[in-house]
Image 1 (cartoon, rainbow, N blue to C red):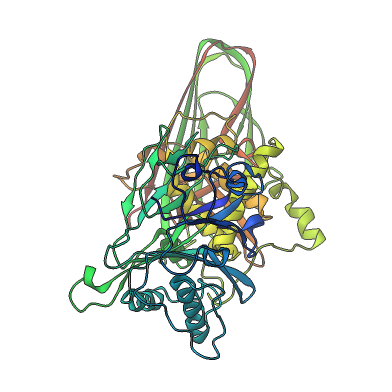
Image 2: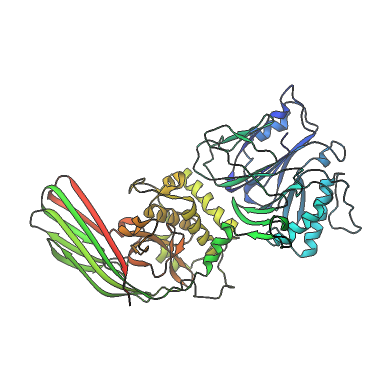
Length: 585
């Protein structure tokens, strides 16, 4: 029988838990319990039952009860070893400390019950070894001055649990409402398995003869997350199960479906080596807080666009946004635009500050060639060098009325159905929660996550593809990834604008297609800093590989070439090529 199951997902999940072990004719467990944190708060809710009868009413609640919604879930099925079969001895156990509820569930049985020292802050209510271990753990954390799992040193925490592991098998999960801590028994007497789940998926049902877990029954969209189990559950849908056994003696810290820390025991490393921490994606994101300073670079750009038509076009008008910006971080050294036909009627700056050229063509043509040539000096060498790292801005941002008025075009999310916006709000908030609402860490996390978790697939989207479509399918091109980032940032109250330009990817870049056409990324407005560039397609901050040409609310405000045919034309064929190369010397 499965003994222990835990979930940590980005955003809130509403799973259905069918306790089949309580079906008529089956031998029920000595007790079962579910703990979770409704509403994203630190207050835990518990549903548990000692000595359940087949078809118990409480078990029906976890299968059908709508309020069963949270980012973190703990499920325990008890086989009694210590203490009588009572509610007090039924897991998960809950304790309140330091402004939050703590939950613990333990698989295994100690050889002796831990004594509780006189004057201890935390004392057991029941008589199990697991609850005594829980109280001792919280007292030890108090002695360390830690008031959350986020405060704890993962290596020290693993070392204390390893010491307790000497008293008997310990595989346990503990949560403080924000993080989920998982420790795998060092002896392997009770094993622990992990499945890192990645979208997209339509239906996902897991189960064995005792339990069925449906993650999508209640209409929830596919979410990223981790499932921890003492026995691998079988997938009953098309999603293949990818269970991995957690190394004995290892400790994992998971937050909002992202691995925050992984500490391996010394015996899995070289002899005598201290426990080592794996470099997680969560930590890799934070390294972008101070990217290496880039050298100043001069870039030559050639942007060539060719329109071809079956029938002659007799008259057309065009708007060109091909002139790179000239400001304190980017100097336009030279620039020219040539057209095979047409007369320039206006050259002006639009409301977004973009240089626009308006051209009228009144002589018939079946081919129109537009070519822009620019030489640009790029000086955005240290994008986050604007203030000491000890200073931080937190969400939500507060804007003065006149600031909000000026930034309003960049704060309004796209017009989408309320249900889709609700889903995207929950997704955006998962980034904020797992980064303690730190503004920069949240933005870096969003940038890095889109890069790692969304596939770059040319031709998979169109100009009408919405940010929700891209979020659901987890694929697209640079324009789509920029739109998703912009939508999430605006839903968090962070001004964000669409940026169009060029990127130098190097001569052998794996995604050379990015450099063969206009590239898209995002600029967000940071308080008392200004606009800073984030490139979710590549998971980086913009420095001296990016040439800015146009900015706006969305793609249509930044289109490099746009035109209207007034007479003639027929079927149109478009070819675009971009060459972006650094100037040597």
